[in-house]
Image (cartoon, rainbow, N blue to C red; front, side):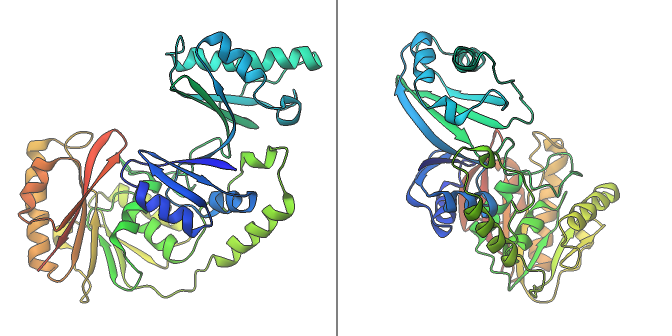
Length: 374
């Protein structure tokens, strides 16, 4: 099968590595997406184990598209709709890109829906219902260069929603991005890991879950189970393998999160307990300036406010100054990885980054900065 993985900008290289590790072939990273090939077993495995991608789209058909009429007819002839969508199944259509006369995604989606429903009425005298929140099938149309690509989605909601984070801070980082950034640090689970500004604890939860081999998709429901070629025996095999790999018996070093707000610290502990990691992650409720680091050096990771969604830039200058002072005075020999969405503020750390990687945190252009504290 030809597939596309959608991913945060800046994580394409790491995402491609993860796909290859999980069995994908012909992997080619592009901006915010990765094309690859996989069989059904690999596709099931990716949905269970991938930590970096938002979703996986399976290509069903592609055809020329130069008008709304050509789109309508192209959709009706794209696949065997008797096989893929019986009237008893609900569906949703997502659209990206644009073409001639198809510049608005809502209008384009409506054209796709009409084409499918009109064909169903002609064939069966009945039609599928539209369900935007919990559909049984989710089709995706991408328009580009006078061509339409029709795909089917394996999930109805993004894979970044792990299920452990009902309680969040004011500006939480997505789990997929946090997992990718942790992977870029090359933390191997042997050195201590501390987040001095941990918020909802996403960095730490993703780091520990990855080292323990916990598959984030084990408890999810997947739309590919509604596909006509769903293979129950393959799915059962991959699910059992993923469940066996889950282990809460590995020994890890000190994993500590620090949060000054007692309410958020309490929420974070709830997130950690929901993820089953309360025996691995400690949350300390105090200002980071008062945090006592473990004796053995390790990794500091954090996502401080940028002054865009959280905090006033003027007020945040002191925060960065104090964070830099904390690192130099108390974390000699440690590595600091900091997600910066404001280069003016990161200058107040008073340290020079050894490496920097461009990434996007939602709509914010950021840098994942690596400092060696000596």
